[in-house]
Image (tube, rainbow, N blue to C red; front, top):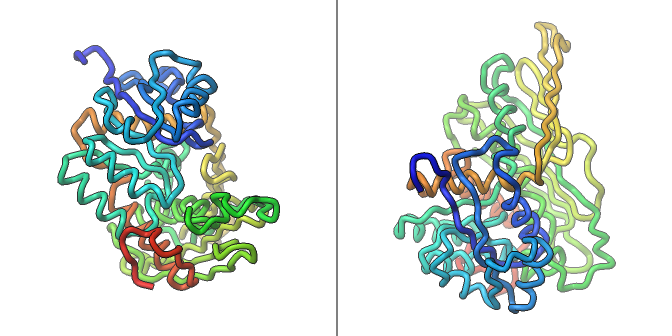
Length: 371
């Protein structure tokens, strides 16, 4: 790379599921369509359980590019000298062992959420990444969307005052009565249920609005209270709700929920401040718009503005750009979504599962957590 050339990040993708498909397709989107000129992405290898499966993925989603290697194992991707960074899109309970192998092979890692089965696993991975001077990031793609960046700017410029209450929900009716018991949403061995699959998104809006707010001064949540409704089919959570309090510097609370047996909530995410409200339209993982209401001294709406966002692609390329820039600049974590935020997320999920008595089958979690 010269001063006038963009940095090229060479990717290996492991797993050939839907999210990996979405990510791969976005890596192919011309960066100039989103105003990016300093980094570009190149997929060099796809790993699956068979070479045939990897090749089908390449043919379907990477335009049949003959330069992309179809590999019949994840290990082959990790060992490939042409791979700089690995995208891990496997089920939650496989993330730890996949990321561990990738780091030991000297690869930078972008790992889907929930990052691991529990916080202890995540801390072990982060320790190893730092020891090996490798970049590691949870794939919380929503954090890097233009909508999120603009919302955060408006929320923190002062006119709205401090945040007070956040409501956020992500639910979808998976019709679990029609799913096989081995489906990722039903199988406890895969970390099934709503919490680890859908829960990261409501929790993200809590983190952005409360944890990241300057008035919070990076203080961790002071308490978490949770309730889990178990599925009647397998021992996973069907619906989960939790409240997160921040009372060290703020006086603020997040009221969050997720369900795999109910349709999506119409309100998305609502952040209420001392002097106004921000309403994030659903779906909260890739919202198209948000509305800001500024209140007068009487609490009435004095002014209202709506911001709408459109871009080419699905929105996964923004996190990929962040990974590329961080690796180019020698960073081990993102300034926007760093290790501590992922730890807070996973510790919150651990506490929710503890209170709801959702224990994964023996042997699934590689590090124990307090039940």
